[in-house]
Structure formats: structure tokens, C-alpha cells
Length: 214
Image 1 (cartoon, helix red, strand yellow):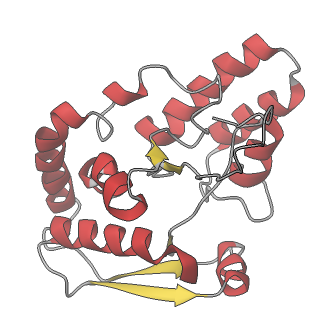
Image 2 (spheres, rainbow, N blue to C red):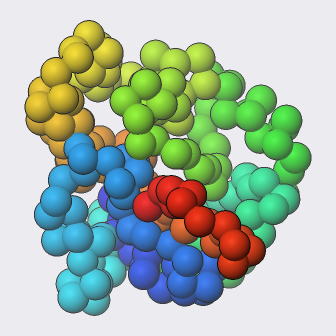
């Protein structure tokens, strides 16, 4: 089911529809991180040229899982992420073939974080992260983190994060980071990244020399 959802979502269309084109594709690592796999745009779900085939496979997987007509799902969403939630709602409705099974639950940040930290049951949350720096990723994504984004009981992920936390070698970080990224996003689909929002920063014409992160 997770793989079907990841294959179906048109991330390029989402950047245009929800954020006016101000977005960049990446996986769970931020797009500027050196440990992003350089070929991720060729992966199923990210490759625009194979979207038709990806969507056919998504339908097949959903039926194989026993949900040919989808399932009831509520998307938990921060109140200021309405356009992104509406896009995700529409995408799932297309996958399911009906709008009757998806709903949006707009909640305040405190409630959202409280739900993220729950250890019982499963929920669908539209999330955001800024995982560019190694320690950020360990704090935000690791299943061992108190409120980590990834809720997978998989010792292989724990081992990866332990190695990342222990090393100070930039080259080893790139190798491990890319292996972990591919394992979580492609092999197991524990996490379904959409895109990263590119913030628009306006300045006066006399402001000079200020570095703008990319």
C-alpha cells in the first residue's frame, strides 16, 4: 500500500499546484545535502517519464493488497498546510477512484506533534522536515528518536543511524546516507517524501552580501 501511494503521487504537479512552482524534488534528505542519491530522479515515483507506468503499477499493488477501491483515511494536517493537504487528498482520491474515502483533519501544531509522538496505531500525517545536516536527520527521522518521523521496527535502520551518529568521516556519511535513503524510500517505502518548499525571500535593493541557502 505504501509503495502504491508513493508511485501514484505526481510530485512535479504538486510543486506547481500547491506551492506555485516554488519547490524542489528530493527524498527525505534536503536537496542540497551531498548524501542524496544523484540518480533519485530516475527512481519509480520520481521519474516523470515513467509516471503512466508507475500509476498502473500503483493500481495493481493496491488491488494485490486487497484494497482495489481504496480505504478510509484521514489526513492530519497543520492549518497552514491546506494547499498541500488538498493536493494529497486529490491524489489519493484519484488512486482510489472516489473522493468518498479521504478526509482532511486540520489540527493545530501542538495536537499534530502530540499525535506524531504516539506509539500506538497508525495515522497519515503531512509532515515537513529540513534534514540537510546529519544531526538534524538523526533527530527528525530516526525510529529511536522520541518523536521520529519513521515508525518502522526495523533493526537495519537502527544500525544505519547508529553508524551515521558514530562517524565523523564525510565520505562515509555520503556512502551510508545514500544507502539508508535508498533502503527507506525505495526498498521499504517507510517514508513517502513529496518535495521541499523553496522559500521566497524579499530584500531591499541596498541589501548586499547576504548568502542565500539553496
